[in-house]
Length: 167
Image (cartoon, rainbow, N blue to C red; front, top):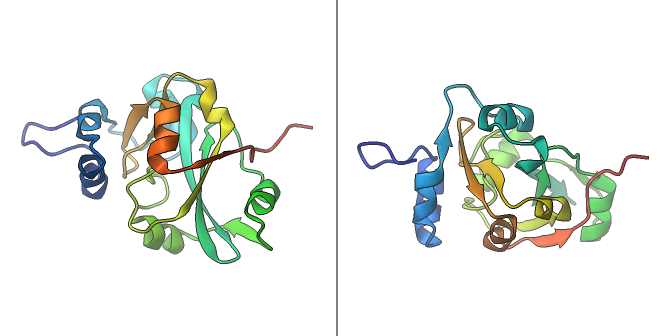
């Protein structure tokens, strides 16, 4: 949503990225919440959608190189499957300083695109189960809706199966 002074509820870097990508109209669909939507559960509750309609943007380190994994909010990333997908020796969750340095955003507000640096992006196929998913708009209080295939394409993501399977 754009405020009365013409600014966006999105993080300024993300609002600029939307303009650069020709997606400035997305600013009008950004929703800001007074309470943080830092976790997928908090975001789903605030929006009033299914947990699986939340798109989590998670940064991992594959052999020390940051990689972004887009995952539905109801699932967990299987680090071993990410490792296999990337052909890496070791994959771990990135530390908060690496997340901020790589993306320009703090954990809990990382959007699926519009980052400070270019990273490899993997998107779990589970996101395609919905007509619309919601993702962070650069801060823990703002989210935006987007059609999953458009989100995957805009993020430059490779579709993969990296979510944990229930035994």
